[in-house]
Length: 194
Image (tube, rainbow, N blue to C red; front, side):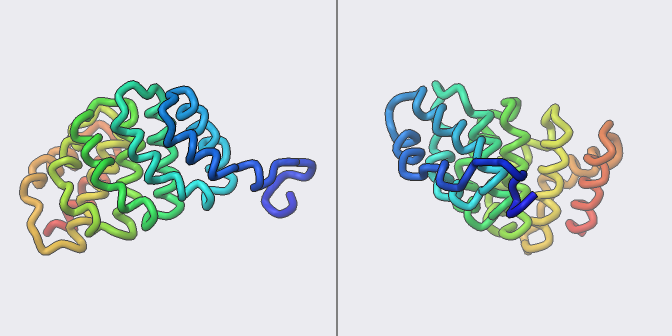
């Protein structure tokens, strides 16, 4: 390895043509949007910084019902939030709204992972979305439940407002959830709610 790439790897940062990706994300052609999202997926692990400029376009794609790449969009948002929570924080409203409106959607765990990453640096930026996030405490996916519990613990740490609406649900998760991580995160959140 030299400079982060395997020896002989010919890829370069120049491969990511940001203006072209943004233009395809902004266009009317569904297939072009899908291709643009796939281009972001291909580059996000290797060099996420240029991909950060796509966040506003990615979040707008969540509202397009005919788009068949919501999973890739959610993955990108989660990865970018993990890399730079502050840059993705302005998308919290759209992400939380999607989670509340589509609690059983396949992308919900990644979107909760995104909100959880934002809560690491900007818990106050998502504290107004407690009702939307609370829906995820009932999600079938344990990673979604664990992320939601973690978010509530972080919100409790920065908020003076009581989170009584989720106390009972967190207590139930801490006591009876089948997933060990969910139980731990729910108890961690409850400790911060006290």
